[in-house]
Amino acid sequence: MSDNKRWFYAGTYTGADEQGIFLCALDMDNGSMEIVHGTDGIANASYLALNAAQDTLYAVSETGDGEVCAYAVDGATGKLQLLDRKPTHGSDPCYLSLTRDDTHMLAANYSSGHVNAYRIEGDGKLAETGLVRHSGGSVNQERQEAAHPHSVFQDPSGKYVLVCDLGLDEIVIYRLKGGELQEHNRVKTAPGAGPRHFDFHPSGRWAYGINELDDTVNVYAFDAEAGNLQVMQTLSALPEGAAKGSSSADIHVTPCGRFLYASNRSDDSIGLYRVDPSTGLLTAVEWVSTGGRTPRNFAIVKGGFLLAANQNSDSVVSFKIDKESGRLTPTGHALTLPKPVCIVPVYK
Image 1 (cartoon, rainbow, N blue to C red):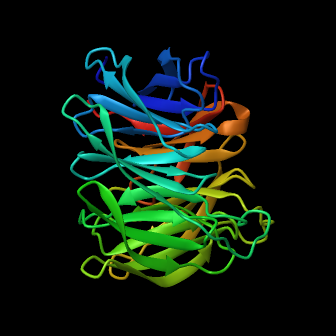
Image 2: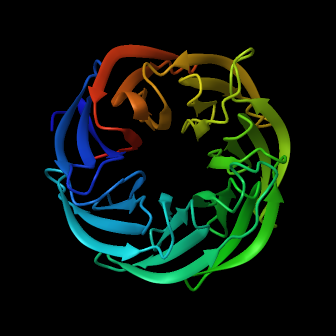
C-alpha cells in the first residue's frame, strides 16, 4: 500500500451470499476512494470494531437471530478470515465495541433489548460471559414500546460500561466484573429523546450523546469516580428551521477535542459544533450536506478527512477537515457501496 493511502473497512446491509464487509482505500492527497476487496458470509454487517493490534475485526450480523463474528486480519493484504461466530441470544444486534484493554467485546441488540459481553481469547475467538436484558418503554408509543439498546461502550477510565437505550430514554451504566454486566446506575434523558450514540471528550471530563427521536445533542459532565452523568446542555442536532425527522444518528469528537460532528438522516447533513476547552459546552457552527441520502455512521480519519456512509444512496463520501476551523469541504469523491452503514479506519 502506498504512503498516501489509508485503508478503512465498511460494513453494509447485504445478504450473507453477497459481499458485506469491504476493505477500501482512501487517497490522503485528494480524498478519492477505491474498493480493495470484499468479504461475504455475513448478513447485515452493520457495525464493526477493530482491535488495537489491528489483527482482528469484529462484526455484528443484524438479523432476527443475532450473531457476532470475529475475523483474523491479514496484515499485508487486509483480507479477512473468519475465526469465530457466536449467537447474541437476541435480535438485531446493531452495535458492538471493545473494552479499552481489548479483553472483552460488548454488543447491543436493538429489537430484543439484550446486551452481551464476550471475553476475547488469545486467538481472537469469543467466549460468552455476560447477558442482560432491558425491559420497559417510554412515551413514544411507536418507537419506545419496548427497550431498544442502541449502543454500548466503555468509559475512558475502564470502570464502567454505558448503554444508550432508545426505548427507555436512559443511559444504563454497568460495571463489568468477571465478564458479567452488573448494573450500577441509570441516567435519564428527556422523555421521548431516544438516546442513540455517544462519545467521550479526549479529556474524559465530558461526554456527548445524540438523541434520535427528538433530534438533539446532550452535553454531559462525567464523574468517573461515581460513574454518573449530569446533563449540562441540550442543543438541536438540526439547523434552525429544519423539520424534525426523529432520525439523528451518529456523533464523534475529534481527537484534538476542539470539534464535534453529528449526523442527521432527515436532512442528510452533518453538523459541526465547536467545543469550549474550559467547559466542554458546544456552539453550533454549520451543517453540511453529506452528498447522499440517510447518513448513518461516519468516521474521522487521522490526517484530516471525514467519511460519511450514506445508506440509501449506496455511497461513501469524503470530506476534507480544516484543522483550524473544523469545517468540512467535499472532496468531490464518492465510493459506490451497497447500503453502507459503518466505517472503521485502519492505521497501519
